[in-house]
Amino acid sequence: MDYSLQNHASYIGRPIAELPTPSLLLSKPVLERNTTALLEDVKKLGISFRPHVKTMKCTEVTRMMLGDGLHRKIVASTLCEIRGALDLVREGKLDEVRTFAIHWYRKQVLRKSTQCLYGLPVFPGALQHLHDLSQSLKIQLMIDNEQQVDVLEAYLEKASSKPAPWSVFVKIDVGSRRAGLATESPSLPKLIERIESSSAATIHGFYCHAGHSYATRTEEAATAVLQEEVEGVVKAAKFLIDARPDRRIVVSVGSTPTAHVVSRLKATLPEGMELELHAGCYPSNDLQQVATSLVTPNQQAIRILADVCSVYPERNEALINAGTVALSKEASEFPGYGIVIDRPQWCVVRMSQEHGILGWAESEQTTRLMQHTGSKSGTGEKIEDSFRVGDKVLLYVQHACITSAQHFVYYVVDEHDVVRETWVPWKGW
Image 1 (cartoon, rainbow, N blue to C red):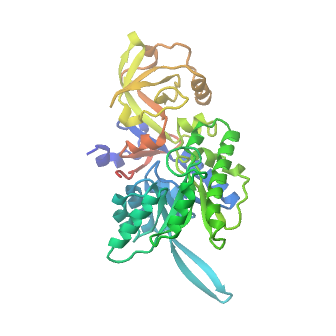
Image 2: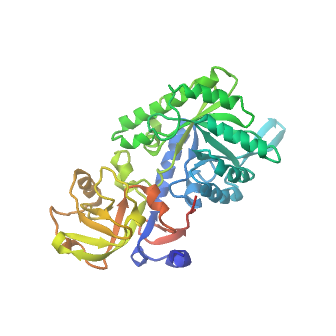
């Protein structure tokens, strides 16, 4: 068992210098600012919001993303995340209670279960688990292939008690080439017709994720991708709306880069469509997000604390105890796999499992970080002048989602880097 799971709460009230390493630090003030900013954008636009819980995978951050119950829809990448979100159901944050005026003298309280979208195209091995979870909250499925409809119908035939048809999103590929059907694919109208004729499923909406938006470098470029997302799902939804004008369909768009520019959205939806935004990494951000130029370095809530274990003057490198399993081998325009925050021209240039090698990597991106941190690093510094065995280093990470998945406890700090809370994420599939 990870030692941190046994004693993490004992570090509450202590400075980060006293933490075991490697440790994942979460700045609560930064998390709160990031989540509040997006919730304000969504409010101003008057659209619905569905946070993706895959990045931090924990109750506390999910609660923030939902605005403490203001929004009641989520998307999850694993069954584990859905099970973890049941804590919020028990709190009442994911069990919507609305009061509607029926007449001027009488009111009726209606309960409406939340919508939790399982974000992978559905496969047979997940169905029984999803059915069991659907007893606690409304589960929605992702579909992008007619064979998945066959799977749902086969499950329905074998069920002892006939469940209601699954509510599904049709996944649309708007350029990421990961999952989904392109709008020009001849398979798309066939899939829509197949679902509509099935007793096992009903279409709730059309969903896309613009993963390729991570390659954008300006607000204008990200806004263009956001517009492509909206146009893609609207075009797909029209296959259904044109045939069934009485239907109300949700079109769901988003990624963290396009969510950062959602306030610039100018799209007007055709009658019968409701716009929904989804995003996941925006509470924490990371170097990949900073590389888009849509966020600043001080909007990164995640840092990794590590110890310097050795120094090698002959090759101008140092060894830290944060390697692949503490960081991840994701990359961006920023060099290496992690950047030393107060000396950003030193980064993790290579790794093995638990070993990270700090080396010098001067670049335009590290110069940009220096301007934010106030670092005065000079060209060609010597490793022995910068690090000693036992020094603590703080690292920005390349990909918050993968990095956070490696850690069993998050040390939540205030603006003075004192631990105020410890959060335990949901682990597993």
